[in-house]
Image (cartoon, rainbow, N blue to C red):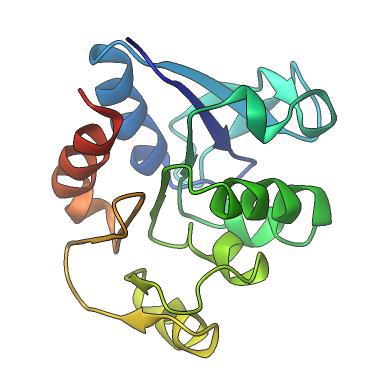
Length: 172
């Protein structure tokens, strides 16, 4: 049975950190809902290659509507974490123990949601100190799975491992 996956995304996301996981999730029978400030808006990846039309505004959704959360990297997570609604959405997911998949700079939303104490994670080199300061144990590995519900990876090169572990948690 396919899961409903929320994706918090805005302009300057890392193109392949959105497209590759979403393709893998859809091929496994899961559905994707992109969430930003405005439904129907088109956001563009930082490489300029990918354009994504937003399905729902953050005001139109609740974490209860979804089974898992994808946080692609790029500059998108840093932009979104300045808006408390996206931070609260992420925190509610973590507090409920739902699966969260965060790659590259994606864990920045987890830092602001203050949900990393006692967790083991990885991320892009430039945010490792932020993750550590947020209370996480940081590893420099292609993929880190913590508690059976949190998958983190460092860069686009890690996407195959990221997808593999995310799909295991989704049960597909």
